Length: 156
Image (cartoon, rainbow, N blue to C red):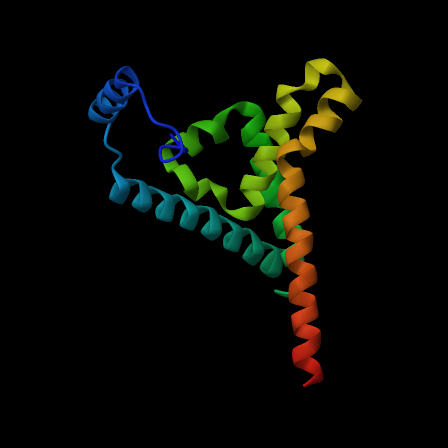
């Protein structure tokens, strides 16, 4: 409970808390960290391979290949989400699939898929940004603050 100090638990609640703590499965933290590291690394290696393909066969330089690489990673993530594969990968990999581009695309497309029965505007359009809205807001705020700091540092 979040308010353990504020609220006194009854003896029955204390007994339940003790039971729940005792039978709660232990989480393999080291294994979960290793899985996240490996899966996140694999996603990044795939992204790097896509960028190298754009450079080698697409006539891009490394700087201009970044945009199409991100677009392809987003497309792959959305396709895997629609097929139900991304969720299975995420169950095994945990936080490793939260690599910003693919995780963000997965969150938006899964929200859209979940609410598509409610219609295009009120279902897909409105629900798609419920989860992603906070990410967008904090991303814009952080970019603004970092931009101000960068501007001040450049002036000095």
